[in-house]
Image (tube, rainbow, N blue to C red):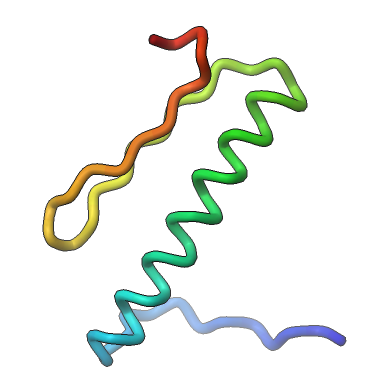
Length: 63
C-alpha cells in the first residue's frame, strides 16, 4: 500500500500541527540515533518547537 504525496504547506489546524510536529520530531531523533549507531557517525540534532522549547540529540562522542 502506497501513501499519497504530502503537500508541503503549513498545517492550519493548531492541534493537527502540534501532533505532526511531535511525531516528526520523534522520527528525526530516532533517525539521528540510528545513523550514529549504524554508520559510526558523529551526529548532532537540534530542534526548536514553535514555542521555543529545545529538543536535542548528540552521539556520545560529541559531548
